[in-house]
Image (cartoon, rainbow, N blue to C red; front, top):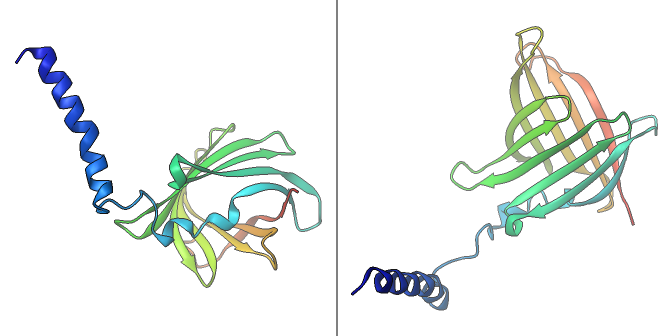
Length: 174
């Protein structure tokens, strides 16, 4: 068989293998386990205010990559812009978030659901100070599917004490 014939034959086999597995029902859809839906309450278009009711920004949170990723698209009233990618890792049974923004900040967080809240934590080293600190961000429904509370706390003593950096109430845009 010529080289072209082999390439065509291999392409046909590769195209049939996934279909055969699906026909037999052996291949579950990617990211179909219930754990992948634990952060779905955050998906939507939101307006965000701080504890005094002052507008903080808007956040568009979407499903991406066939529902395997929850992506955040933040636009702050102060001009800040950022995005996070959130996904469940079935091998570690933990959620992961990678946040980047227009100020050069990077946050790497991980965690999961505790007491009905999504709680993600991660250590960051201050660019100016060189000191390590912990970030803990918590999301929870606030009385209805149309309200979500996000609280971001920071600790400089390994989690013994926490200082609040942000407390925002998300209201679903209609």
